Length: 139
Image 1 (cartoon, rainbow, N blue to C red):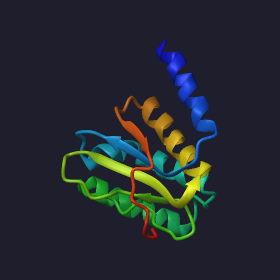
Image 2: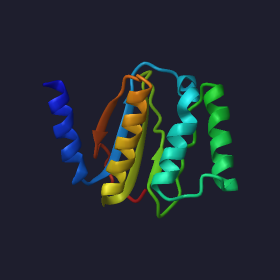
Image 3: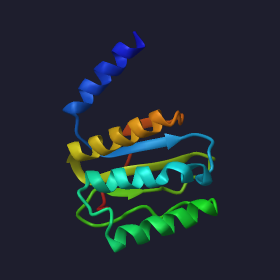
């Protein structure tokens, strides 16, 4: 039954659009993201059709990895006109990052689902939510 529910959820996401897709990892430290952060970041860049090997992408990745090594919230990728990759400030011991645009988009759902699949393959307990932002102001 559970696998049937997952199939229905995946089918629903095929035609779904959202302004934001959130990944919530309870009770982890930022340092715990380090072993697979490269994969999260390159998956995100590939989905928004950015050059993974560009100098800008490498610099953002290295800065984020330095932050993670020091158990600090990474900067994300906040480039106008694209799907943004944001780590909001939380003080409840939960890691959250989200992908967002100012308009509903299939792209946000696709990126979120790919990262969901990646975390599932790594057996990382997490939750996925959509459209949990107040986007009345511009990102």
